[in-house]
Amino acid sequence: MRLINEPLEAAVMNGADLETGAACGLEHVKNPILLAKAVMEKSPYVYMYGKGAEALANKCQLEMVDQSYYDDEIRHALVREHGDWNAANDMADQLTADTARQIAILEKELEEAQAAVAALRRGSAEVRNALDWTGGYGVRISGSPGADQLEHGRVALSQGDYLATQALSMKAARTAANAVISATNLVARRRREAQRRAAEERRRREASRRRSSFSTSSLSSSRGGSMFGGGGIGGGSRGSFSSSSGGSRSSFSTGSGFSRSGW
Image (tube, rainbow, N blue to C red; front, side):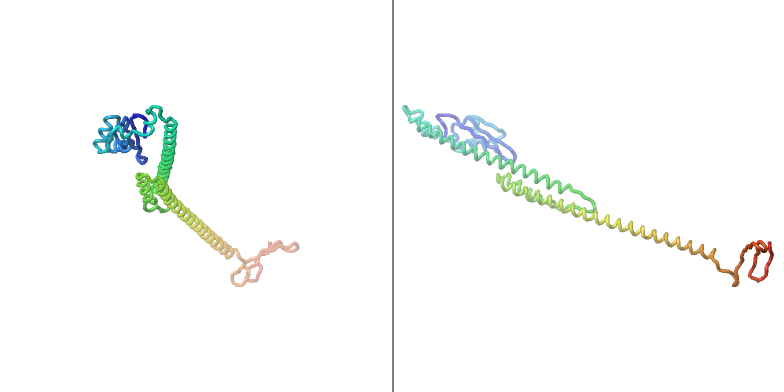
């Protein structure tokens, strides 16, 4: 509904790719919003005005109407001599209220679209992180965790289903993040196992080194005892050296039983 003889206008935007279209200065197009969509989808322009816009409407076979189509009660109330201005004001207030409700709906839809795009970006980042992940110890993340849900989320966004886009994007992010967590935990387990085996190998080598050292020490002690021990040859003592204060200073005796000399 419009007042008096003001031209009509409309604009649209696609939340998925931010493409826009607008048409202004319209006098015969029944539904300007359809023409704005046609400008976006079927013309190389973003904005069209007046007769050029209406020519596109005719080309797209949009419904055209005469000016009398826009006559309404507000217009008649305003131009009629001694018209009911109170009624016109009431109608204008109603129109303002309706417009405010439509604006609120559009603002809410815009917020949902922005939230959906943000969720899709977060999901894409998580999926990319899983694809690029490397952790060593032979651990790899197989496949593309979360990629399927992310693609479904993109389709939902292009269809204007913003709540579904958010849900699918969050699911994709969780799937990818869980894959990274699982792979990271596996790397940690393999690292601990490698460290445990390395520690066992060090202990084994240390024990082997100690046993080898002990065997060498025992062999050396055994050879020293045989060389300098008290065993004699032929049943007697090999020799002795004695000294006394009253007789000869010393004597050396052998196992044959006679004294050899005295000093």
